[in-house]
Image (cartoon, rainbow, N blue to C red; front, top):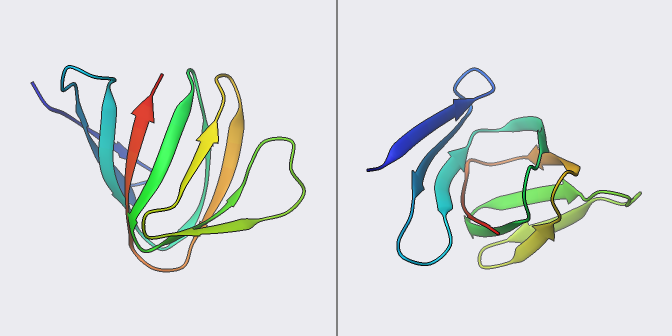
Length: 93
């Protein structure tokens, strides 16, 4: 069964799935700035658009565009700046 999630007053929406591999979410983010916390390791891939990310324990912001990925370990938080509506895939574990 697919489940949907909505965050930041509907500006971030995702659909959760399990496909026999690791659980994942596919979602979209509207323009804005967001902070997320992790409960397990996450690999985020930008499908379309751009995420400007400040990873845990980093001082600099880094841009990720179509096809680029970044990893955030469990029990960490990270910040995002989204300048254009962006689609992403997040794989957990």
